[in-house]
Image 1 (cartoon, rainbow, N blue to C red):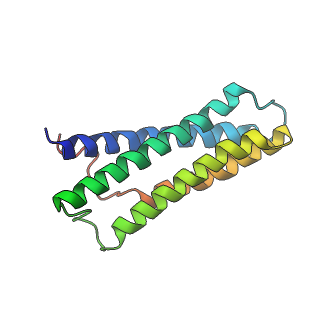
Image 2: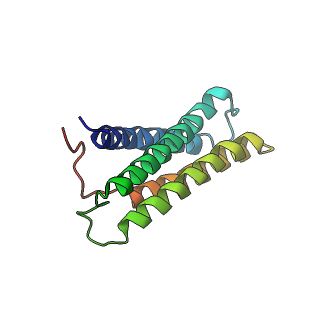
Length: 144
């Protein structure tokens, strides 16, 4: 198995972790907006895990993008439009920024509801960016 296939498989597998932790973070954050629960470390865990999987996804994606460029492998050859590679890259980085904001702003907010609100807002925006950046036209696990 080539380095390219391994990187692509890791990037593809991690996207499902990103989606799962993103949905978990949004559900956990929205459910705390009623102000009845304190924002404990256990409540913050999904947001932190979402941020971590997002950062890993960006690192894997950048490694994959660089390797494909060095090997002259076409990026998203099956995409409907040539700009998709840049949309994918830009939205992925933006999602990681929003995921980071979800984590930091939920930690720094002054009130419990403010912490949940920051986590819900930024995690939700990150999840939207991810859904827009995903190459839905690709198989779940190519090369397997």
